[in-house]
Image (cartoon, rainbow, N blue to C red; front, side):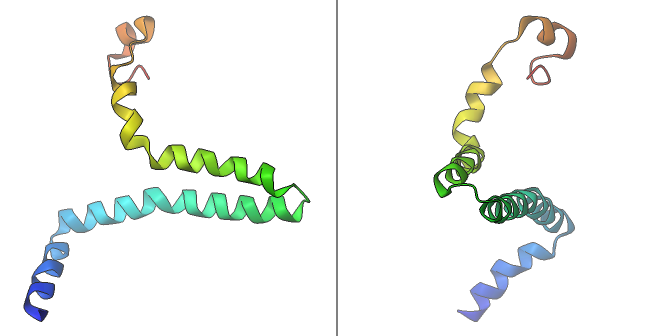
Length: 90
């Protein structure tokens, strides 16, 4: 068991994999900090819980971006597509 666990962790010693791990962590950390801080701040300001709950929908949409991103990839904005290209237009 320890050998297989050690083998699994050796992948993270490669600089590229470790860099991607850091990028992924740093991409998700701001959302955690913003939403938790915003929730506490709005609670302190006396905003209703239901209203604060609506902000969680933004976080949910971000979490399921893997589902809706192919649709956005195929979205064509004619003027911007001509100026910037397919992927940069959105």
